[in-house]
Amino acid sequence: MKKILFVLLMLCPAVLFAQITGKVYDNLTLTSKILKSERKYAVYLPPDYETSGRTYPILYLLHGSGDDQTGWVQFGEVLSITDKALRDGMATPMIIVMPDGNTGHRGYFNRVKGDWNYEDFIFNELMPFVEKKYKVKSEKRYRAIAGLSMGGEGTFIYALHHPELFSSACPLSAATGFWSLDEAKSYCKEEYPAIKDSTISNYYKQYSVSELMKAMPDAKKKDVRWFMDVGDDDFLYEGNGLVHNLMRKLNIPHEYRVRDGAHNWTYWRASLPKVLEFVSQGFHQY
Image 1 (cartoon, rainbow, N blue to C red):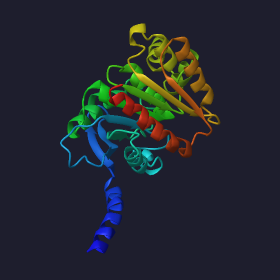
Image 2: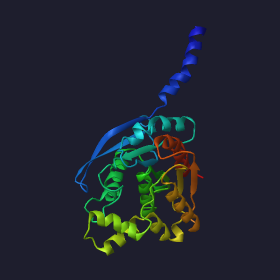
Image 3: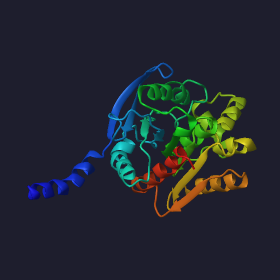
Image 4: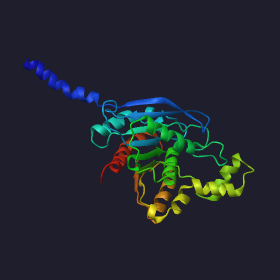
């Protein structure tokens, strides 16, 4: 009998360890009237999601160019990394939603002529859909956004457009958008040669990270907690440094980290635990 008890006690930690795992579904869809198509998304659900009666904070996690909603699942190892962060007490249980931004058009944004309004889809269709379908805390304090590269630019723009919706924003190795009106004109006229300069000017003001930050009222500068992370060998290093310097100049509070690394999944897998910890701090009392 004592031997059996000893074996059971030895097995208990392993059993408990095995039970502490979330679930990922990476081929889910919703119908978009705005985009006139079915759009895919992936979701991570925390270990106790099915058994608890609670609601959860939510993190929107955006992939980079060339990937889709499976990027953070397949290459970013979101399941094992998030489970470990929960076991280690570094993160709070949360729902993570990863939309498919692989649309054939620039980034996560509306197009300049309004013929593909992906940002409208995110805010008017995807977010209401998932926050009704899943057990989500709907207050700003419990909602965060993060993303890498193209998704980092999306993180910047979404949080700057809607600071009332996000408690934290974490652009990783981020593209930083148009740095001049001429750059915006070159981009827009390549696809729409006859487009008016006034239309491009408005688009530039709407989708330039630097212009949006410069236009930010002083009263709004602490509305979002910012965490930026970029590798010292990343080809987007300079742009991230420019945004960091601009934020310092404008007195926009933020955390900025430069680590050894390049523009790859090895770097972003190491970034994800830091993101989970940072957004969890925002979800908590502090």
